[in-house]
Amino acid sequence: MVMTSQRAVAEGHSKNNGNSYEVIIVGGSFAGMSGAMQLARARRRILIVDAGRPRNRFVASAHGFLGQDGKSPREIIGLARQQLAAYPTVAFFAGEAVEGRRHETHFELGLSDGQAVKASRLLLATGVRDELPVIAGIEERWGVSVFQCPYCHGFEVGGRQLGVIGNHPMSAHQALIVADWGAATYFTQGTFEPDEPQLAMMRARGIRIERAPVVEILGSGTSIDAVRLADGRSVAIQAVFTAPKTHMASGLAEKLGCAFDDGPFGALIRTNEQKQTTVAGVYAAGDAASAMANATLASAAGVMAGVGAHQSLIFEQASSRQGDGHTPIDPEARHAS
Ligand SMILES: Cc1cc2nc3c(=O)[nH]c(=O)nc-3n(C[C@H](O)[C@H](O)[C@H](O)COP(=O)(O)OP(=O)(O)OC[C@H]3O[C@@H](n4cnc5c(N)ncnc54)[C@H](O)[C@@H]3O)c2cc1C
Image (cartoon, rainbow, N blue to C red; front, side, top):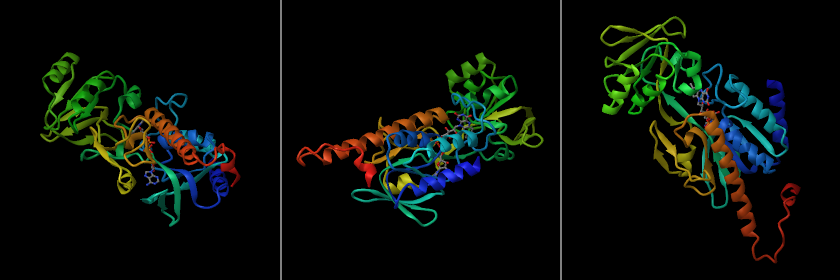
């Protein structure tokens, strides 16, 4: 399967002469490939640049993505890549976009192999990097027995003793939701105290509250038996949920001058309804531009961004032909060169 994919990548490159594309998509995961699919089907020359580190790469199986439930992220993304590679105007670059510059008529990206590539439109689907709370034993269990989203992984740990470790002001809210999957303990870490209405709901739902900070996660290998508190006690827990702080996985949006908004977990690239950023011609989708960390939602935003970028190309080309003697635009002409 890897061989097939690599062959497809090589073919994609040979289909494009030169380093110029109509759209370059940075990030070839759920959001980026969904946008790419719309553009590929619109017969646009596109390049997908991907460093191969999707946010959920730590899990053995991803859940809730319609028709793909239980497959590994690598499998889902690999299949999408294979399907995209069958389109004649798609090229791939396995590596990183390290530089980004805007020029008057196009954008230029520097790739990790030293190449420069350019395009009229960019789609940034670069995702985010998670910053976990600093607790011994958490990193190695991320995506295995420590999760962020109960809709993605709650079913598999349903009915067990669940711990929610406070990491920011939304954590008490997360504990109220996670409790729907099992007996829950909310660890405030001495900082993220629930407000009065939340306390009342926690009492009503039987959620235990611990104010002594969790300092270590205990259990053999990547399983969890308990958490150890700063006061020396331990609490029996079998799975942990926590919402990490997030950071942009790539500095490209900033380099290109895109504006950001404060999201609940970290900064997000500001976009409009068509997923265009504050820089004309630069689109953004997925976790880099939305606080709702979910592959389906990232994919849906990618579709919108791909459609937005495509339609902006159509309307730009149509308006640049106005007043030239009413020559109709021949859609095949783009493919002739
Ligand atoms: C532990 C965990 C488990 C999860 N489980 C699920 C689940 O079961 N179901 C679900 O629906 N959601 C799940 N999610 C959420 C899901 O992972 C994200 O919502 C989704 O991956 C977002 O897709 P994206 O395309 O926006 O970004 P990502 O999937 O993070 O992909 C971004 C891509 O861009 C690449 N990239 C970044 N910068 C550059 C650059 N400069 N140059 C080239 N490439 C670059 C990265 O390498 C990566 O491949 C989980 C999240 C976590 C943290």
